Length: 241
Image 1 (tube, one colour):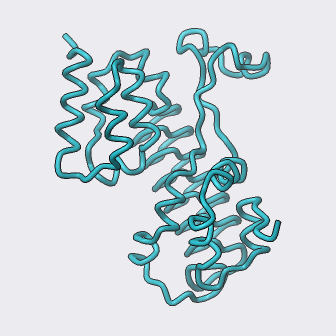
Image 2: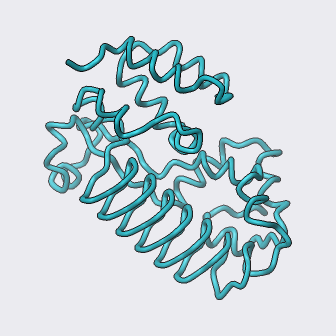
């Protein structure tokens, strides 16, 4: 017999103990009353939950299957390890494509986060074969195609990385919001009561950019080697407007 919602909620609260969760999000957990609400909170904070080690496949297996499939956390494809992957043989979270390792990559065989293309290592690169972050051409080191003086650990612990974790490239679409083409391409929507839609990185980033404060935006423009043209090419954001 599967546990009750209250038992699942209490198990998650126990898993958050000593993890210093964001207080507004923690209050959402405390106020949740259904499996769907709890899973939505986890999905909204998926990267943090992964890094904090407070979720697992074993934990999700305790939820009702319908609620889990609707949450957006379930994998679509085969041989995926992690959560919210679309494609095959991905390891990590919210990848689209095949054989990605990391989070929110689009393409194949990427290692890192938010890469578009193939065989990238790092963060928010477009093209193929990059190491670093915000690179478009051949790059020897992390930021904007030039050596930055930053270490890997400094970038991962920076405000920019934390803000990037808020960029959500997945969205659950209910049947009433689906087009005829989407229904035809996702016949399981009637069973799952919707489908998980991939949002292009540029669109997802711009949505977040317009909701960030001026100070939060400055974390990006203050990066070493910041290049407005490269930034716009990757994110779609013109910082001069």
